[in-house]
Amino acid sequence: CCGCDGVPNSPKRLDGCNVCLDQTNENNTRLINATCNGCDGVVFSGLVYDDCCICGGGANYTDQCFLDLLADPDNTTWAFEPYTMNFSGYFNDKGMRTIDECGECRAWGYNGVTCLGCDGVFGLGLIEDSCGTCGGNCSTCGANETGLPFNCSAPGLGWTGMDQTCEFVRSEGPSVAFINWTAFPNGTDEFGNATEDSWYER
Image (cartoon, rainbow, N blue to C red):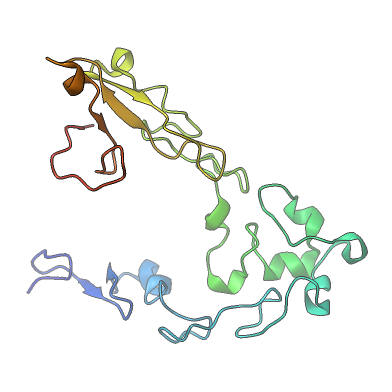
């Protein structure tokens, strides 16, 4: 019998959200149905936590229940933003027990991973570029570094201000069109279309 991953005798099964995972692994218990559960634990209920971390509530960051979580409620006029604000300076002890370092309700179980950079620092937003460099700008895997017949450049900045992917452009070939053929490591062409014949290989 095959698991949902197509592997014979695999313990992986589809959960209620159609996600394939090993439900016998206790480390995966919190992941079962996590991608479509509401905050009430019911699949596809659509319920979410409000700003005071009340499931299905309607409070926002101006309400008293949220102000009670703040270190300086009289001088706080903005919702918490993990990339520009100091977590422990913004929330009091109760607030830090209720809300994680990324501003998410701890009851979701994210434990700060939604804004944890590849350097292990919360809120900096550093990500690995497609060369595998944390916070990199795709400058470490050009033809001269890799010995491969293509250069790597950054096509643009992501929402964190860091390059989220790399653009690979052939540096050798029989024609200008061949040399200038662009590929991306996610299997798309330069226009974002999925390709089946990408020449790019790591």
